[in-house]
Image (cartoon, rainbow, N blue to C red; front, side, top):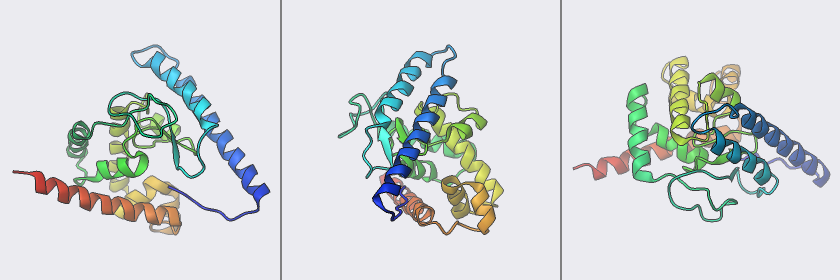
Length: 222
């Protein structure tokens, strides 16, 4: 997800520094929220620390950076060699299970996850969104997601959020996706998918991915 703004070099530099500062601050807050003891506590504190370190080295051409996570093949070109993407067949089973549990359209969760993070549970956006489903820390907290860098917790939270959005917009998938990307307040403000190029492209891309996923899945069924 990218928003390109034409500006003089000096202004662009200040904006980039400000965006980076916000991301690092968000990650720092996430690190603090993970300091309570538990199964994931120590490992996720370390992951949060790596996020802060990696944030200063991100490529401007990428929508998110890669930090360490567990499971799956090594991510080519990742900043942290420990970062691993999801094993696709296992992920598909999880996606379908969450779709059925929340009454979501087939292929929706996989399409959103691919659009948001390319199946990297360790993805961190410049805005501070975390994990497989790119949940903002405040949203993750509202959804009861204790560790948004755990892919299955993130998936459950993302599925719950999409269900809430579909209920809010009467089952209109385009509006729900627009709200997932730009926030419900903007959808409410414009009375439809916000006229933001990033959001317009996001909705179209996810819907295309859904069609491709469902077509592919129907072909492999006996």
